[in-house]
Image (cartoon, rainbow, N blue to C red):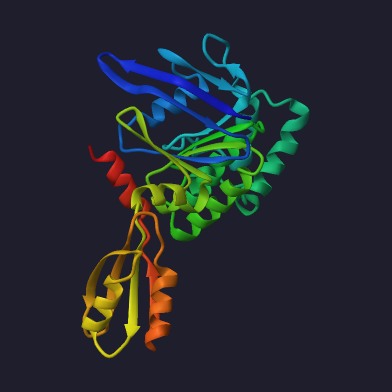
Length: 308
């Protein structure tokens, strides 16, 4: 189910928590929704679900506006950052309770519970009380309750917070599996998690969208010019340095290690220097032992667009 947001604005007194933002999330897409604390992420997600009124703009979910209409809870599954669970309840009883709250037909509740237990890997823990589970399994229970009514849209706020590396991988794979058939908005501060899980990244800062695209697209936009680190076996660093400087695609050469003949090379504009460097080495009988493209990290992009 597609989500279309147009000119969305939310004010708290004199502060604009969300300031005239527009974007679309397509069915089968996992959107990583990023931003510093207080950037407007949670406010936006709550307006999408209809928990908060919209001051200006509109949100359409599956072609229907959520503004001024009765909220359809069955459309959304929500896992908040602080997973609200009843620790004294066994997993099965809790999921049955959630299914009833979400108005799952009585004759389908047992089927849905079995489906969620299998999908979320809870079979061995299903008869335990939630308070006896590890945090990883509690997150699985949280995901199961968010999906017990088979919603078309999943909104997950910090779904892997506090999990160990193995648990993070398991939850990540589960989210990727779910994203094949649902619309997923995932908010997190764990940037490598976004890159490993999400199809697209949207960064919000001070209520405004400051970046939108795939991880590769955002890197290219932030990086601009190509940067390569190379290591060349040759008679001397000065000779190689001068030859590299003469290449038509090269803008700047820096010596990283004179003894090891390691250089950092910045290309001109949007041109690439890989083939020119390779041919230079072949023509001079030098051995090119290393050529590594410099990759802008997602953390660097996040800091660049949010520190202002």
